[in-house]
Length: 208
Image (cartoon, rainbow, N blue to C red):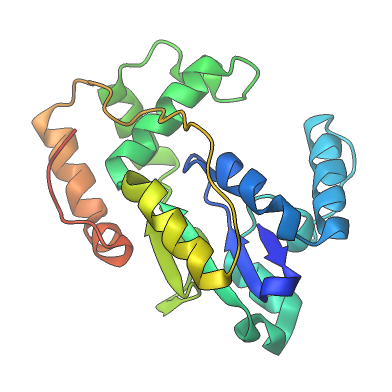
């Protein structure tokens, strides 16, 4: 999450949605003290040392917590985020966790197929991108842009907030990768994510 003070805007960084590339393009317009504070706080977190719970110093806080922190001034900002198709988001998380051996969940899912991983996720740690972007039924974002059309959408965003920036080559982890998924697991996933597809502006297609 970045505050862009001169543009009176807030970028919410949904993890595994090319956020690092978008963040790097926006850094010249960001609040310097926040950028430094986030870096220090993240290093303390990684080192498992005492760190701040301030949502403004967190890379991926829930926007509801940012709203509480900023108070009424929260609504004076133009707020935007990039999201991706819910199935591709889960695929990206799966491959990321397999790749990063230091992550706590790596040993748990190392031997899992994607079908098994998705079942485990739905049974134990079901996550939605909208968990970060909504406060109950209240949408806390002015504009939701899509990973699948990121270059076009970023150009639209740049024009909207008045910046000159472009994105580097993106590593679309998970997107387009082939995975095996059983019909019962796919059916359950689509049922649980029906509202997610609608809120994020995606058709409820059964693509894997």
